[in-house]
Length: 103
Image 1 (cartoon, rainbow, N blue to C red):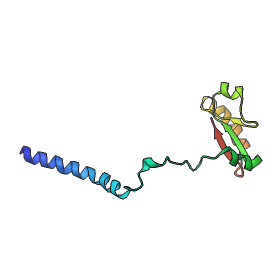
Image 2: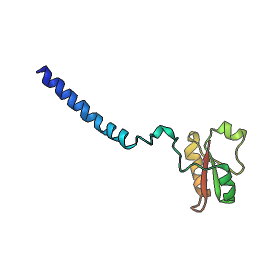
Image 3: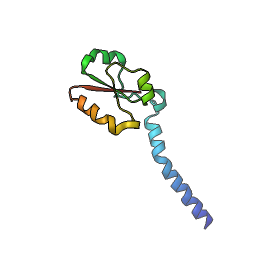
Image 4: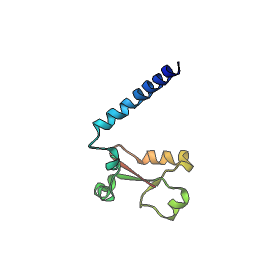
């Protein structure tokens, strides 16, 4: 009886490893850890300069950091005062404008 339980455990473990083995064989020449993932929503500062006034800057930092300094014309929107700040941001935003959020 113990031999049959042991055999069943081995079969289940083997079946559990099949997808991992298949993926390792399929991606053997291109493991995910060789290149860091690129966020398609991430932009460079140079790109934003080319957009000019079409950018709506959103500063997501806490109040104290925002008050110390921020991008000119940036609007503050953080989790500390989300309800109070969101209406103003939505009023300033239009579909033609690109949102750039920084923190």
